[in-house]
Length: 452
Ligand SMILES: Cc1cc2nc3c(=O)[nH]c(=O)nc-3n(C[C@H](O)[C@H](O)[C@H](O)COP(=O)(O)OP(=O)(O)OC[C@H]3O[C@@H](n4cnc5c(N)ncnc54)[C@H](O)[C@@H]3O)c2cc1C
Image (cartoon, rainbow, N blue to C red; front, top):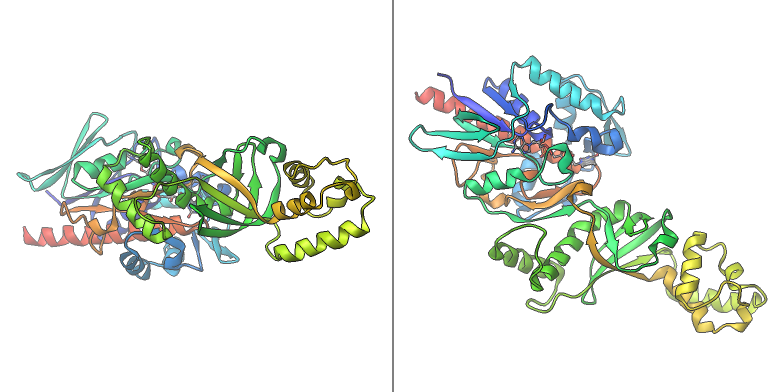
């Protein structure tokens, strides 16, 4: 009987692994819980699929093992992604470095992959959710079970994705499979996701979009900053800069929840949480064992101006425009809804005359434009997240992504503890890790075959 490779999860990484291994002659079975392959791809890039980026670099990712990740990306980078898609007939174009299919439709990315899977004669099993995986020492095989079916493989690639957008199929069951094999998990939190804030006035500014610089503060320390288009919602903040910051905010909130014994985000062992906490604390320069406090985001709508300049401007204008109402005085700075909110927060009334109000309150409005502080109480759930931070630690896999705990098992995609920023980096990781795992598994099968 020929040696067989089983791949659990028919998403971006799983399909790439299957195609790579089959092209190298492996006998591949691709098992997918959904009724068809690659469902998540359809939602990517707002339906256009941002499948990679010309500005690929290790700085676009978060992982505990940057050296290993860097090696992987060197072996399969952006030009390899483009060449691969060319090989399956997909034309790719760049928009300021962001790569999209020329047809600007995610469905065609899914299609070219599915057609190639079929072309290569890969055995596809759909509607099959794998729930159990064991190493069968007697048979020297890996036993995979689920949805009433049993499979025995010589090698297995776990490419089940994360827990983000579970309606697309990646419901976190891959983490359980990894655990069954003795792997640990770095705590899993939603990332590239909207943040919810404590303030009750967000409804008044919902719908506002504005360029801004955002700084995350915890215990008075600035931990991370991002710039870009901020979107205000009725519960908090959204937009690319918020997405980029959401992973660090969620880890800080996880630390706080753990401290207060309310750790519900992911059932991870306290050893893992402690390890992550100290790593985060080191990264963020937070004193260890100190009480995690609130997570505050400071929003600067005028990052090109200094506060001193704005205070000078206030002084000049207050002299000139004393006969204007407060609302008239501040019209023209920022979005109207924002100015009305800041006027209220500063304790002013829109209809008051500038000459009659406390100057400190006028200055306070300018200050709010630069240093509006909002308190983050959480993020939207996994349902709304584009990816997850955390997962199977990279130090539990070898350079070719083979498990260090169970030989013959490989990992690919978001199941591993690698998450990227917005911009095509997460799919790049899926293609890269799928290629490396598929290629390594095919080589292992060839070696075993020649040993027989
Ligand atoms: C709304 C949205 C937009 C996004 N946009 C972009 C973008 O434009 N660019 C970008 O780079 N990234 C984007 N991402 C992220 C990107 O889609 C993921 O990082 C990528 O799909 C991960 O690939 P994967 O193969 O590891 O996991 P997935 O694509 O999630 O695939 C995992 C597959 O495994 C199957 N599966 C899971 N568990 C089991 C099991 N136990 N048994 C059998 N099958 C199982 C699932 O059904 C799924 O098909 C976006 C994500 C979302 C949600």
